[in-house]
Amino acid sequence: MISLQPSKGHLLIAEPSIIGDVSFNRSVVLLADHSEHGSIGFIMNKPLDYRLADLVPEIESEFKIYNGGPVEQDNLYFIHKVPDLIPNSVEISSGIYWGGDFSVVSVLISENKITPNEIRFFLGYSGWDSEQLNQELEANSWVIVENSYKKNIFVKSYDTFWKEKMIELGGDYLLWSNAPEDPTYN
Image (cartoon, rainbow, N blue to C red; front, side, top):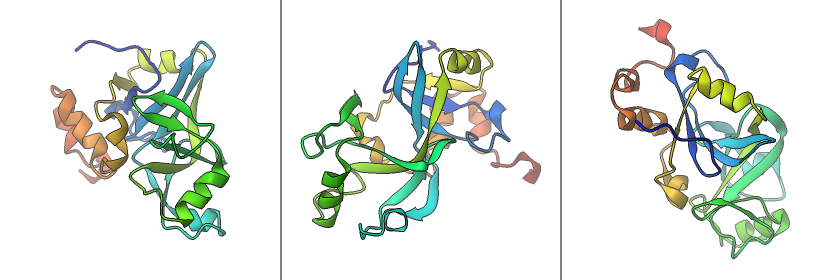
């Protein structure tokens, strides 16, 4: 398998070897930014027990909130695929955008002009200093893969996302695809 270098828009798949890591166990992270200064990403498959209305009461919405990562978990972030509706967004890649004017997002939600398949909200983000991600890659904590879903990543089932990636990777990863999340249950 060809080893990719980290890049905006790629996915980081948590290696089974990081079992026990509370933040990243069985995580699939979309890299939103990667440069010599560091990397930022959002965990795509860890929903929290919150809805948008729980955090922003003036927005009556049942949109799920996801755990974006362990950094700044008191801040709300969002990625989306409707830059024509949300000004000031920054393209990550493949039609996926980060941030933008939240007041516009609020109106779009209240007018039912945006759906959960077009936007995803996160508490916190995943962040790495300039060499930290490379060190974790060398320690076999992550596998980097292309985001083959492109902007359709929003409709991926968070329940099976990591398992599907293990199956796609094949080889020894197949064994892990059916392993319990906590190996002590085995």
